[in-house]
Structures are given as C-alpha cells and as structure tokens.
Amino acid sequence: MGDFNAKIGPDNTGYEQVMGTHALGEMSENGESFVDLCALNNLVIGGSIFPHKQIHKSTWVSPAGTTENQIDHVCISKKFRRSLQDVRVRRGTDVASDHHLVVARLKLKLKKNWIDTSDRRAKYNVSLLKDHKIKEDFGLTLKNKFSVLQDRSEEEEDSVSNRWQKVRETLRSACQEVLGIKKYQQKEWITAETLTKIEDRKKKKAVVNNSRTRAAKAKAQEEYAEAYKVVKRNIRKDKRDYVDGLAAEAEQAAYNGNMKQLYDITKRLSGKFSKPERPVKEKQGKSITEIEQQMNRWAEHFEELLNRPAPLNPPDIDPANEDLPINCDRPTRDEIRKAITMMKNRKAAGPDDIPAEALKVDLDASVEMLFPLFEKICGRRSDSGRLERGIPY
Image (cartoon, rainbow, N blue to C red; front, top):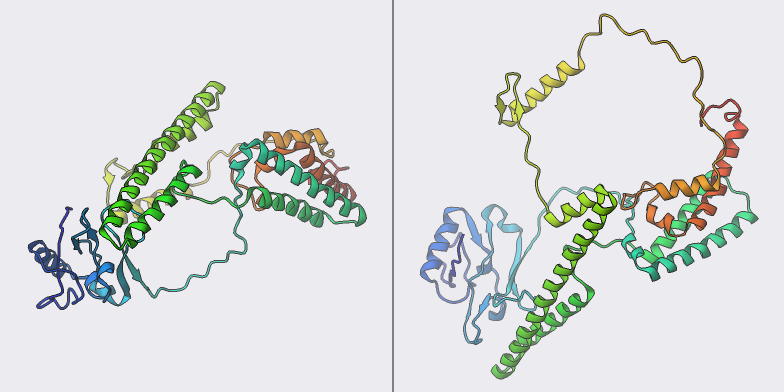
C-alpha cells in the first residue's frame, strides 16, 4: 500500500484492454507502473472509460486552486467490466479533504431473494424514556388509549384473542406515536448540535465548489477550514462526554452489584472484537487445521456421543406419590405488578413487539389493561374444569 499519485492520461496505446481514452492529464512514471499493475492483474481503470467534464474527472485540487489532477482511481476486474455503469467525481460531498470523492455505479444481475417483511418485528426507541418529559407524554398517551379501550370493552363482549389483540395494538400504537422506530446510526454518541455543525460545514463545502473567482474561493476556503475545526472540536467533546458517561454508569453498576450492566458497558468501551477460533483436536490431542478434517472429526464425535449402548443396570425410579402443590388460582393485580417489575430492560421484545420498558412506564395502566385479559383466560380455564382438578393449563 502507498500513495501512488498515478496520472494515466488519455493515451491508451497498447493498453486498450486496461483503460479508456477519457482520463485527465498526461501519463506519469507512476502512471505507467499503475497501468502495468492493472494489466498484470486483469483490472480495468474505470475513471478513464466514461466521458465527463473536467471538473467531474479531477480528484485532487491544490490548496491554491490552480492545479487539478486525476490521481484517485477505481479499478474493477475485467470479468465485471460490463457491470460498471459510471465512474465520476462528486465534488459536493463533504469529506474534509483536498481530495474529492470518487463514486462508481455498478449494476449486478443477481438471483432474486424475496424477503417477507410483513412479520418483521418493530424495535421502538425505548432509550427516549430516560427523558422525564417523554416518559410523562408516553404515560399520558397510554392512559388515554386505555380509557378508549375500556369504553369499547364495556360495550361489546370480546373473546380472549380479540381482547389480547386490542391490548397489544394499544401498547404498540402508544410506542409508535411517542417513541417511534429505533434508527441505527454508526456513531450514537454524536449529539444533535454536532450534526447541525456538520450540515453547516457541508454547505460551506458547496460554496467552495461553486465559487467563480479566485478571491471568492479563497474566502470560502477559509470559512470552510474554520467550520472543519469547529466540527472536529465538537466531535472530540462528544466522544469524551460519551466515554465519561459510560464510565460513570459502569462505576454505579459496580457499586450496585449489577454485573451484567458492567460487562455490557465494558464491551461497548472496548469496541468490537473477534473471538479466537477454538481448535479441533483428534483423539490423541493433536490439533486439526483443515476444514474437511475438522468436519469429519465433528461427525465422528457426535456419532460416538449419540449412539452409546443402553446402560446395563438402569436405575429404578419410583413414581411420585402425590402431585406437586401448584397454585392455579387467578393472578391478582399485585402478582401482575410484581411480574412486570421483574422483567429485565434492554431485552429483545417477543412476537408481540412490546418492550418491557413500555409496560413499566405506568404500572397502574399496564396492570389494569392486563388484569381483565387474565380474568378471561382463567375464566375459560375454569369453565373447562381444569382448575378444579388442579391441572395447570
């Protein structure tokens, strides 16, 4: 790897299979080495194939704005040459560099793999519940929806499944309105203020590209450099505050004895890591490196493990003399409240898409929604005669 600074130029004599005639500048010595490297590895230089304006070819501009060169290239294998639709420079992209972004457009013909998105689970942004105001809004919205549900339930008699569907839709609609779907971003620690500064820097980058005179471009370049410094300063501050906040949470978790939260925070601070591969060994203890031999060893292991002979003297275990004392009474409101309180946060929601944090915001409303549902379930069980016989449903 290295900084080649290769200029290939429009003359492709002898290199017709490697490059086109639409490159910028004149071929340099490093350009000849680069073209030879592409010819040796059956590569095609995409930036020399498609005709564009000069401003859409130059990838580097000198600080004075007087020199422009095409020294950043996109190469593709000859096998996929027809998949390459276009290669050009995007001058408006803010990458905080004196190089412009080079973008290649590809079109691959692949086999269609239809994905059914109808049953995809929704993940709500429950982290917003840390804000006291949003938590109050969610509780108020849930109470209003529950009052509507209660009025409808008094007017019409519902089955257990219909009642559950209404409770589920009430909770999901409240989550959708107040919390919304969780959006994933690469760096969650960047604040909204910094994102605004980044947008401002992007606009100043567009002013630099659209400047017509040298004086206007120099002034715009100074403003862009100042905006770049402000963004870097804000990003460093956000990252420092984020790490300090995680460290404080880890310290509090260690003080409270919450080892799970402590280990989760430690993983987030340490970053991504890959687990080392555990070696597969033969019966004699020698490590196996080849994949086929490892698969054979696994097959041999499970064949021995799952095909053992029956024991010669099987144990004689007598059946239990009495049934276990299982409480099959209807659950009370206190039991429902205790069950909701014991649910763990930051866990994936089940098929109902209802996170535990949403049920804990207003325990009274959640208990009052679920209690009639459990009464219906237990009433149906009682009608079937299972409770009288002490058999759990």
